[in-house]
Image (cartoon, rainbow, N blue to C red; front, side, top):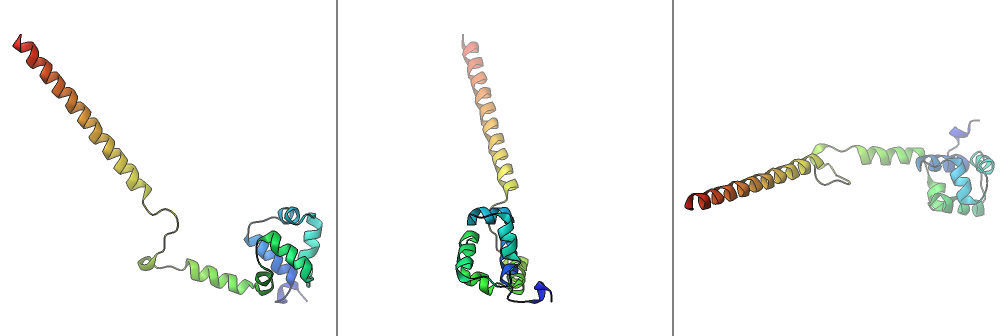
Length: 135
């Protein structure tokens, strides 16, 4: 009987949650104050006592219920529902502006500033020429 066919294999659930959090066994072991071999044995265990489960949950930053109720299918549903977005209702996380637009806007402001400086220089030269002609 394969461990993948058992829906309540606690070690497998811990392993998948750890992987989804992009955490290596060594990191989980360190967070639990144990070693990688212990984590490996834990992840191969079908049943885990509640005290050990609390310890693992704390190290993973999830609740005991999250581990007990974890299912690959639920994760795939969440991912599917989260990332299936049509353009009309697109949700933007993070950047709320186009960085390229900001760069162009900044560049245009620099050009305007440069043009004003050039114009000021032209005005100054014109003024100085008038002064010279007046003499």
